Amino acid sequence: MTKPANPATEQDHKPSNFLRQIIENDLAQGTYASRRWAGSPGDAAHHAKGEPDPAKIRTRFPPEPNGYLHVGHAKSICINFGLAKEYGGVCHLRFDDTNPEKEDTEYVNSIIDAVKWLGFDWAQLGQAQGAAASQDCSTAPYQASDYFDFMYRAAEALIESGHAYVDEQTPEEMRVNRGDFSKPGVDSPFRSRTVEQNRTRFREMRDGKLADGAAVLRAKIDMASPNINLRDPAIYRIRRATHHHTGDTWCIYPMYTFAHPIEDALEQITHSICTLEFEDQRPFYDWLMERLCECKLLAAPSPKQYEFARLNLTYVITSKRKLAQLVNEGKVSGWDDPRMPTIVGLRRRGYTPTSLRLFADRIGVTKSDSWIDYSTLEGCLREDLENTAHRAMAVLDPVKLVLTNWDEVMGAGHLEPCTQPALPPAPQGASQGPEEGSVPTRHFKIGKEVWIERDDFLEEPPKGYKRLYPPRAGADGQMLPGNKVRLKGGYVIECTGCTKDANGVISEVQATVIPDTKSGTPGSATVKASAAITWVGVSDGLQAEVRLYDRLFADAQPDAGGKDFLAALNPDSLKVVTAYVEPSLANVPAGAHFQFERHGYFVTDRVDHAGGKLVFNKITGLKDSWAK
Image (cartoon, rainbow, N blue to C red):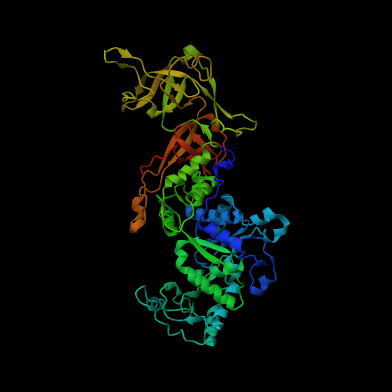
């Protein structure tokens, strides 16, 4: 079973990056030192009455609850929560629930679970600073829908100040008149409406007097702007849909680009950190903050948006639409299929919070896109599990080995107890057991019959083969004895032959046991063995279902350049075998990690593993086996 993670496996030294430099510069200059914390929602006057904000910085992680989070979100979680914790601040978990048709409480709950599993808490400031920050210790995440009333007020304020208008062009007319990168947009014929006309029409939108799609509220900025995002973007649309939180209170909903800056401002966010695809939206973010400060609805200093490169991981896709397609078309068993890059999938596969946090630290934060090889993620997992995952022996492709002289030299029916360490030697200066210097052990028995791996025996071995093979004729025609190997933790044996079935498939291997060679006993090393092989006793071995997972895609960039990602599916991404494992695994709980000696790292399945039914998932091999 997995021991608690050693903090030393995570980087203690945090390398500098442009986000840390920005935060450190703001802290040095006291950019947000004058802020007052009055909770949210609110407005400029509301926040002016608050107490001094105990948080030095405030970041946020703002997922839309319309699907399951993936490994790219894990990077963002680690960045936002990690920076806030590092600099004595708070990271808000906030649901951007502005699109009711696609959102569901199922996704809300899964996101909360994912953030907590990764080791983060949106109330960490209060926990660290005690009663002085108790107002910040709410266990409930933030959600955009809590601010719908304020957002509506903000929209009317833009109308009153001449910065917004109701447009009743068709979607196609709006698309054409928006222009493109080579030509400016064309003003809407509704752009010159009076404030009173726009206010009246917007209220009619709110009151359900207009059909879905009949009108939108647009910000009035510049239809000739080289940044198409500033060509009078839509900020409200009509959408008759029941919201999972507000029900049928509203039939108009704010657009994400309008709602998100307001949410940041009301929550007193200092550094709004997002991925590079939002870089072109930053001018609108700043424009909206300036207009609402002018209207006295928000107080300066406003939050600032900063962008970093999203995670591009080889052999992985992170498009929610494409991930949903894999699920809906039955290419995988569900969102938590261990081959999926979703956090629930990675967790079921056996990835640990420590390994994902280490991965986020190791790949760093940059402003330029690049590809990270999947082996980097696997390496972080191996680094975490190397000294914590208990060892065990498992035979995944079993063939029976019979020790033909066992009854004669050991006694008929005799079962010899064997022990092996459950963990490797502890690193210098570290304790590995309940008592200083103790090493946990595992126990099993060897008898006349054991299971070995089928490829640990070859009837006609190639040069250099060190495992079991039968007697053979030498160059001079004389018979040479079969090869000697050690059954790990047990005895040295000498191969004598094999038995085949009617199809010529080897059904049994025979060998003789060499007395007085049991591991750890005096004289055990007097007989030379060319190798040590893993095995499981027939008498006490346990049958188990082992799911051998591999990468879901065989192409390093399965959806790049418009490729059909389904054509890149790896046909060998899952193989299920019936295996035998040692008896120490009889009562292990779901979610327990092991290193199956020689095979790699495995975890008991979180869903299907139960008492009387052992189910193990392969996480990764002992080393990277994929060609670069």
